[in-house]
Image 1 (cartoon, rainbow, N blue to C red):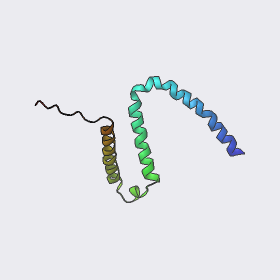
Image 2: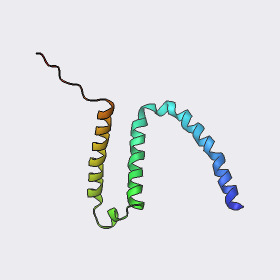
Image 3: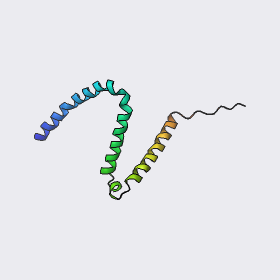
Image 4: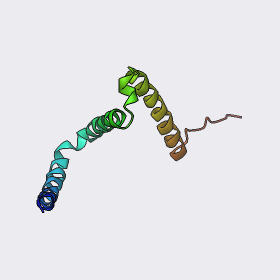
Length: 93
């Protein structure tokens, strides 16, 4: 019964946090990409720490993140290229 009460109380706090987020969006609209970048980096760190603990235990932490960044850069570049291909050069013949 205690856990049900605690879960219900935390459920009541979610709309308050949502209203705060919507209200603060007008002030932080220009900082949104930076905030999302920090959130994405934090998620990558937590995932690598909790789900893939070998990346921290063997000292290959920096190699893992460099390779992950190269991989994600390549994936995003290819995805953006599919959405909007680069402009073709004009031939003057």
